[in-house]
Image 1 (tube, rainbow, N blue to C red):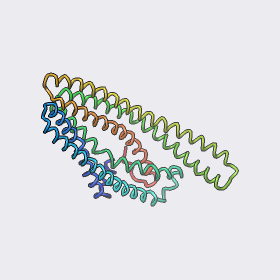
Image 2: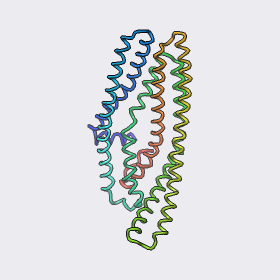
Image 3: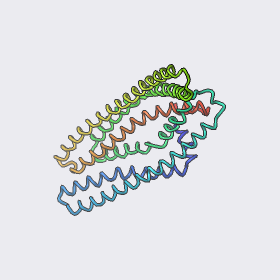
Image 4: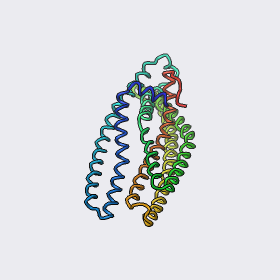
Length: 306
């Protein structure tokens, strides 16, 4: 994976820099905005209404900047994506000596699906992981029990994702294989229909068989992934309310301000979002492995994503 990231950085240096800059601004604003909102609640609770008004205005301006940078981030993302997609497509279609090593269905799906998966995995989601460490640093700055509880739950949920990785990869390999077979039969069916051949019914039966097989493994693949993600998110949600329950106790004894509860809730939203992303990354990484190996069958490049 790191070799591919290095390669992309070299081929699209300007696009990568723009993407990193916009992503950093988004992640920074996403973490700063809840802090100002928390401070606003605290000031209003203490009857400092004038300060509260100013903080609301600042929070609004920061939110508007967040949406502006989100737009710029999407713009830079598609510029980078197009650059990478064109490079991988050119590398694939320029190779002819290895073309007989794969079937038509696999070749079609490599160009239509696998290159897309590789591009998506390599240029998205990386910076969101940094949020974990910033949030953990904030928690340890004001309460160690909240910090250690959050870290323990995070580690346990991460282990679940890692353990599920091999199963997800096996299902994904089977899913892609059945998709290749389905694509082959689709080409044959189209040819028979276009040329009005006599074997249309037999080919249609084979196509329906391969189609059902693909749907079966596609169903298993996606249902298992989503089941794992929802299990993890549900566990984190329970831990969030347990910590908020504890935070209310801390407010009652004067250890923290009431606005801190809002900040904890907001930051746990970030943890939930990032774990949902992490679950998608787990699935995407397995897809990335499979797709990269399929691409290498055409280009004969060294398999590096093991």
